[in-house]
Image (cartoon, rainbow, N blue to C red):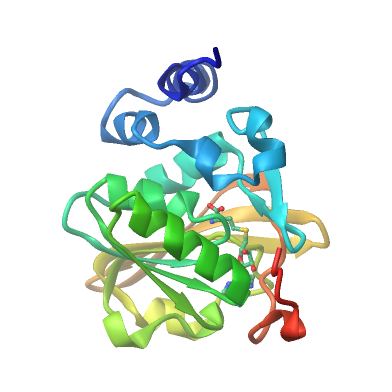
Length: 221
Ligand code: SAH
């Protein structure tokens, strides 16, 4: 019989998150509560809890668990906060934010990925609104946000993100320094202006312009 996924989740939190110095708290609890294996394609399910990113189709990836935890920690959001994610992908990052009690809006440019994530998130009863769109524009309809998290490598900071940030809110974005090299950038909106900070180097798939409807490709993955 396969190991119950809860044990895999526990092991992931212990060996990948706590072992790297993050503390027990709502974030680790939320990570234990999510069936990460359901967010990866069936043929990669045996690798779902591994310490790295995985391909999810359409050349996109689900991020490494530790990177998801780190960015969520920098975002600093909690129960009741409105959060915007750019780059739904598998939906795992959005699920984690919803499990923390946030009201999540997540924008994805690839229609097939958005649909798949939306179906899974609703099946799991998680409070996420998935929107097909170009995240470079943010999502003004539900702004302002306590947190904005971009999960694709961005060539620059788009004005919409800063504009849609609430007072005291934070933006977390991997900014592309050169092809294949990103660095986490944090911006906090203060009364008197913005407070910016650079964090870890990392690697993300690129933020791309416009929508992708698969050009009539019915399979979509
Ligand atoms: N957060 C995801 C991982 C994201 S991978 C997860 O937890 O699985 C990056 C995603 O960003 C991809 O799905 C890609 O299609 C999407 N993306 C890239 N550019 C975008 C844009 N301009 N607007 C919205 N989504 C975008």
